[in-house]
Image 1 (cartoon, rainbow, N blue to C red):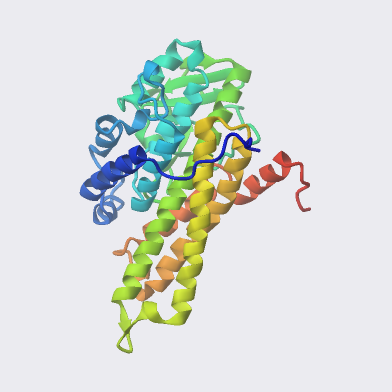
Image 2: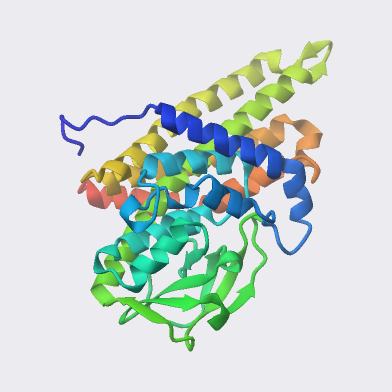
Length: 365
């Protein structure tokens, strides 16, 4: 557990608030819900130029990368703020997959220099996008399968310039042009999935087997912990949008939000949101400080936040009444993202099993 001299810091700093304001303004201007609803009608949900603005101009892609390696020298706390805003807007960007999972995986190899450090610098600048070629449902524990062959359910493969491919003898960087990418039809149309086959593509070996496995676990752990922040942002938007709608919607000459039954439901959702914020911030802080109990804190955050996000999205759809069921209202975007995130980087059940193992408590039969 966290030592008495290393208290968790769950508050947002002034720097984090400024970063949030910049990201929110960018997304409001370039990737509003109307824009997303139009984009998902096409085969390409990514808003042109948005990645360059967020990753390069704001510098969000290099938040986890030290300055000496070409990054911003920030931490997981700042990256968590970016993901909160991306979750609020349900933005289709490869931030979690590239700027967090792939970047953190390469940071586990950066001490070796060479190709890993060079690739890391290009990711930090936003010039390239890397995706770890494992199913998006892969949890940090146990280690992912490295038997080779086509990999199903790889998130954001369509946006990748390079794939990080775990193989039995190590981790390889494979140019996207050398892999066969077959799109799938995902539940969440704002986060494309694909089958990636890089079996015959060769590539550049970045690390040997054991080093590669440790680096991949590091990347998945960071991704799992910061996914909780995306779920937190999504939950916040769902509650705010529901409160706004129930204030404006009238029945019997009264706002429907004044009805006691609805007030109780929204109050309970607010309590869930407060708990989710504490859990997500704890995970981000533990990752940022390298706390020894970071795996446990991450597992707790994912086990809790994934359920809260789904419940918030379900309530958002239902309390909007008939309009919440329509394609024109963005509530369905939030619900689909929440449901897909519920199994991303490990289901709640997988993380509960991890909690049981890490605390030496036997899981229920």
